[in-house]
Amino acid sequence: MLQTLVGAGLVVLIELEPLGDEAVGDLVAQLELPGGEQLAGRLARFTGGNPLLLLETARSLHEAQARTGTLPGTLPLPEKASAVISSRLSRLSGPALHAARAAAVLQSDFDLETVAEVLRAPLLEVAAAWEELEAAQIVQGEGFAHDLVAETLRQDTPRGCAGCCTARRPAP
Image (cartoon, rainbow, N blue to C red; front, side):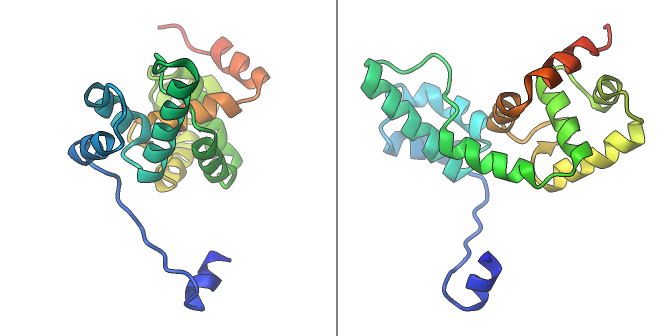
């Protein structure tokens, strides 16, 4: 539908690259977030520099501060940002989504071999799923594109799957 609107000249599609650390710092300063200088690096990692996700997270921080008078200790998972990421995840194949969920449950301590062991799937199958995840900008190398993706995956992973993935985790 979007391409139809673009083709008809009703919509202009503007693709933005992720913001670098310095640009994130500048934006955070303009948004006047309390503790912005200390938050800028965390926000850059959490959002991957994605302008939409960055603004939604900043909005959530402002709302949390308005409610409680202080900033939360952890960065919030903004509802709108999570919905955008969930929509992207819904377009993945089953094997790619399973691989992403397994990696999210394993958190930062994973590689392709570990994900394959957890899923009890052939390494080549997991590697193909990983290529799909890279093409969808869910992962970069052997890590998530940004923390919001991992948080959304953990939130959206069915309870039985999270327990299953951690129960199957290979011994170090």
